[in-house]
Length: 312
Image (tube, rainbow, N blue to C red; front, side):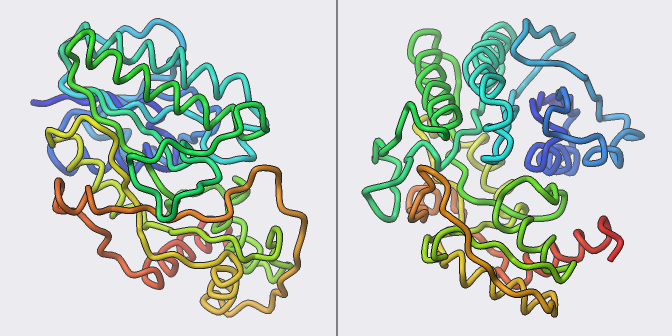
């Protein structure tokens, strides 16, 4: 049976990947230290004989008994509120954590997939963002701890590929949403849904004209799975190219929740990207992948999950 190690496996994306690999018949080792992940995200897997959880900080030396076929490195704070709260841990898991997991992949002869991010493009001067764009990142800004950690992780991954002939893959993940997101993780969709379900003011930063392109988590995990099994070494964008403004997203969520909330505006955070839209030509061509789930359908599934957990 094929075995996969997923670091950050108790997080939002990591837990959905654990589900995906269990469904595909793999033995899954989930590793997390719960800085931002939660046991609630994986509790449904604890009785599965093909699932094992290890509470561990991957910035330390990693030992895993037995063979490994794949390692997916998803451990990292991923929202602004998290990496501003844990700036040093964010940089450590992007640097030391990537080094330790690459070393394990080398020792096991396992294929390695790095969870990178659209934030490597920074506040982009190219739109939509293509994989060949090098980005516009402020290395000393407040978001630099996340952006530069991921950029370093990409460089280290490619170094292991070139120097050690390690099989590596790099996914640049664009804005993703779905069940299990934390209510107050600082990102737009969980913030808007939480506020709207409680009929509180919905907070939009800036004038709301900045754009995002949101991808439902099931589409994302399918794209990542296809990339892992492909032959592509260079980074690949995985996300939904349908762009919309933050203000329109807030209005849509208020409508879908039948909320009485009003929209209020607050100051835009420093270095917040003004546009974000993936060019997924490469994923379409190489992976035969593109998003399938309609935004309304995905948002309604997310809202139902939030209602259940918030008990509203």
